[in-house]
Length: 351
Image 1 (cartoon, helix red, strand yellow):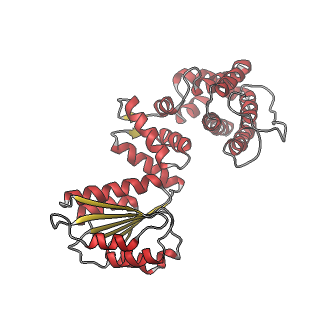
Image 2 (cartoon, rainbow, N blue to C red):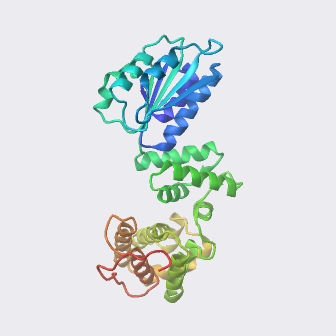
């Protein structure tokens, strides 16, 4: 029975531990937490003894088979864990795992943990034997929509409700890494007593700097203070702020501004557009002045620039991330719309 890590908890709660479990994949947090759930379920089922075997070069599979065949001191069931550091067992190991998987269900529970297994290995006899007697859990990286849903569900488990913007921010910060996202959420839970988490709270938790605030940078640029905006970008660089965070903040603002400008060009009022896009009252004056300063096509062009800058920041396109961000901030603040000189190497932090 093939299950996702999310469905494993329900299976254990409903059925108790099956005779055999195989955990495989390249997502370490899922592997660790799935194994922890199985151990906890065996404990609840009265299985107290645990045998762990880490398979290394020259591992004696026959000794494992003989050891696991011996009854425990108190003739109780045991959890037998086999950890494969590579992607698959060798020929002898495959035969031993097949034999262990075929044992009576009233005997030990077998837990095999492996790395990423190719589709061909999932057709091997040992794998099919385990699948036929128990549960196989594939621990794979999540696609972006599933990753964001996972962030929301994990936050709920910590007693937090994330706004869509806060979820997006943590997803960008973690870049698909579940362990990194879990660490950010744990930090957020410690830093904030509030149940509802907005993007400002999330940003405060994930940001590594205290001197400059990303929202202030955006406000300074929107207000048209080019000199101060450039100083802030350079200050953030010197403090070691990740450019992806600045790119996220600028792209988010430009997308909202471009959408409002298009709506106004079609006959809507600035007040209605700002209300629809939930612009805070203390920002409405500066946003109104910017919308009067720029045409809709100009803001759409800046939004395209921010998307190109985002490609550079994330490494999908060659270029200097900080030069891209400086040009973007300069243009948003009312300066000339420049493009970075091609071929310039990326700056290191603080350079």
